[in-house]
Image (tube, rainbow, N blue to C red):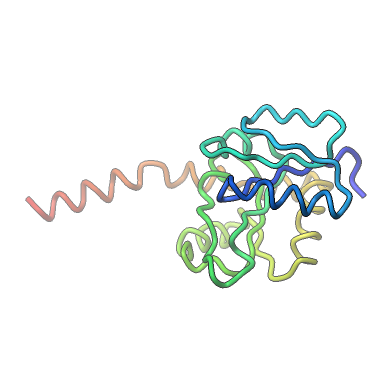
Length: 163
């Protein structure tokens, strides 16, 4: 058990917040819904976000994140640049086929963790949250900084071929 642990759930489709809240109620979690990044937990263990456009702010406040859409084979993952650019250590599932090149650049640098089961996700997040060495080791922000400006460089190269 990790003391004072809080969970923020950000569904890809904010309208799903009522369904998620129903499940949380059934499971006995104290929760609330918010449409901003203030994270006012009060007595709640879980906050469900029902807004879009605030992920970067939330990642910047987080000690760790699990990137959804990567545990089921039908989604292909979500972009990992946003948590990385916010300096948030993160875990992804095994189905990241829409982002294989980006993911590979993070994995070879140990800048994120890829898990293939619920138990691996749990253990990875616990490690990030409780082991300062592990938390510091997963420095995805460095990978982002190293690649900053790569889009401009590629655009210049393409334009040079067109001229």
